[in-house]
Image (cartoon, rainbow, N blue to C red; front, side):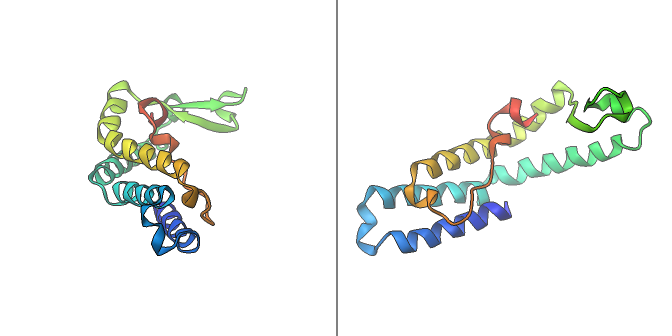
Length: 145
């Protein structure tokens, strides 16, 4: 979220050089305002707290997996050597956990996707000096889980 806020600040800096006071009725200005409104929804909205609280709870539980001798049963590994695989590709998640996680993150995900759309629509936002944060993991339940 800190990088998202940094991008928001970069958008504001781009607007100060691209828009003038008389532009407040232009499409570019309205699209810029839409980006700022969507940033508020993502950075300050109620969905943020409940989603990240649930994510942190899940991550804390994942840390416990590493203490279990059968930890590899909770993951999808890449490589041909079983336990000597190169990397963990995915952590397996029970369907009920995924449903609970999405229930807590859907509101934030919807806000993040609305922000992504607003940024794509705004020439000012696309001209910001910083790249936007990738919010794709919050697009839907399947990508989150």
